[in-house]
Amino acid sequence: MTQLGQYPPPLRTIIHLSDTHLLGEGRDLYGKVPVDQRLAAALDRIERSALAPDAVVFTGDLADLGEADAYRRLRAAVEPVIDRMGAELIWVMGNHDDRGHYSSLLFDQEPSDAPQDRVYDLDGLRVISLDTTVPGYHHGELELSQLDWLRAELATPAPLGSILAVHHPPVPTPLEVMSVLELHDQPALAAVLEGSDVRAILGGHLHYSTHGTFAGIPVHVASATCYTLDLGADRERLLSGVDGGQSFDVISVYEHAIVSSTIPVTPGPEVTGFAATFRPMIEAMTPEQRLEQLSSKSSHLNMTEAAASDV
Image 1 (cartoon, one colour):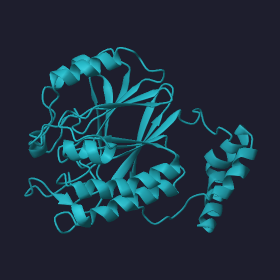
Image 2 (cartoon, one colour):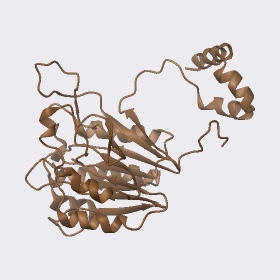
Image 3 (cartoon, one colour):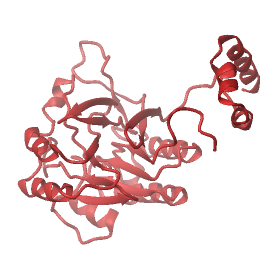
Image 4 (tube, one colour):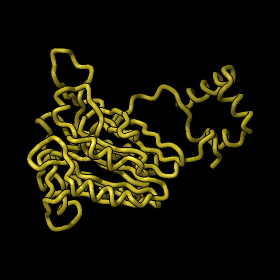
């Protein structure tokens, strides 16, 4: 395939979803949100797209009440899609999850109350699933043993670097109520990450998409497939969760850059665009011809009209 811009295709592509909050028996969350349907819509959109992920990462709160049937339903919904795409499936513990059911029903292991930390190798790109949960609470913490384990793991750099996947993202939030439930003692984690090969941190928990930096590392927080928190809610509302705006992210890993792009679960109506049939014509052009056809305002208008007629 002809390279059209300055950057080659990403070395690795990761789909990043979060906060599915499934309930047992397919119950609606709060009796209002059909979370199974919201997850199914996200998976369908991913599978029908041209994204071709190397891995799909779910950053926690997989089940809302930690029910065994919720994990069974989650696995039955997700694994066939991931298998058809030929991708690696990476789970992360969330504060709503149950370690015993998580370890036994998602990994076919003996039920365990220990922190659920795991490492994955995506052909040179290391992804570390780090359990930031505190049993019985909704805020996040890391045990000293986890920090020591992480430090030892990062002591050997990976060929393409590392990505850390957690539930509680180490970034501030404008929602004061949510700040009570943040990851505690973040300087301890920063000390471990300093000088490491960690290139990005993926998180969830906040139910809205946001980005920041931590210890000089980009942090990308995916929204939720269940419901989202409305940052623009009326000032009379301390917190407002809405059944709308659900999304997931695509993480594109390049040699010297990592890009996070947010994709809505429910797409809007298409008003313009180019059909895939246009690509051979575009590839057949010289770089100079492509600039004239796609960048020149006069020629671009003609191309846009042709595309509009194809919609």
